[in-house]
Length: 348
Image (cartoon, rainbow, N blue to C red):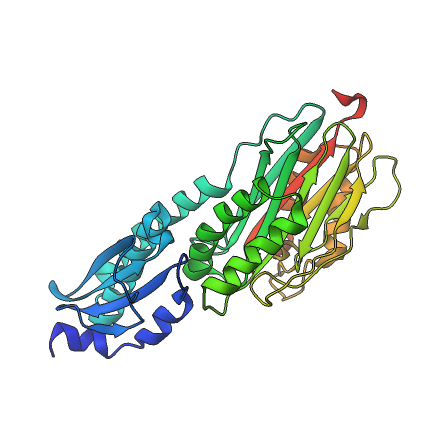
């Protein structure tokens, strides 16, 4: 059997399916050794950024993996192509010795992704910012962003989002969407308009079964007013500093990418000194114990209760420790991202 036949016998459609992102997204194509397309649809004009990796079966060329679109010109995009090519080598050759190659590529992708999402928070006088990110697999689809806007008063922008699904396909859509959200927030009048703009781009320029839940917020640092817009994401948890019960900040629209118009309702909350807002992805509440029980909102509230009165860092640490203890080594149900914003007492 020729090297190409080893490759052709695989279900290549299942590999390229999640990457069918049109235009500015990413498009994955698997070709044979002479450039004929075995799976996927190449861009019509053949131009634009491309990243390629060869597929060798028993040391001989069987084909190559080609990623095109904006995401191809990123470190994570290039690492993704190498990882897919390595996986195809394993599947086509049946040689377990090459698993080391795949492990190395996925580990490299994980390091790159952590450099995207494990951000050093900006300096925000009078507030504590804390965050935590853990992917369920080597790479994941959660992301968050904390940055000061360039408009008057330099408000704080907060984004937390979750691409549906896990693994490489979700990570690639994350790599494309994160800078898109950042730019939209920096060039619109508020969170709701920013989410609407990103939704319009994704609906109009890509074909995929993946969607994004996203929550964008803008904090006026002087007044403590937090303006939010929620596109299908988990509602933030408001933790009052006066000891009264925590509550959810409700008000949400559909997921990004699902419909042509979001119509996300604008929501406001006020952070008094001592108050904390906790944002998280569903990997927290969907965490499972070895017996299959969910951590659920009850587990989250219990963890928050144990850390009340502490800083944003204390709350994030307690929630993470509680999820880890509850899971007790069980395989993660999903990526976990947590962001907490606390207003200091006395404004210092």
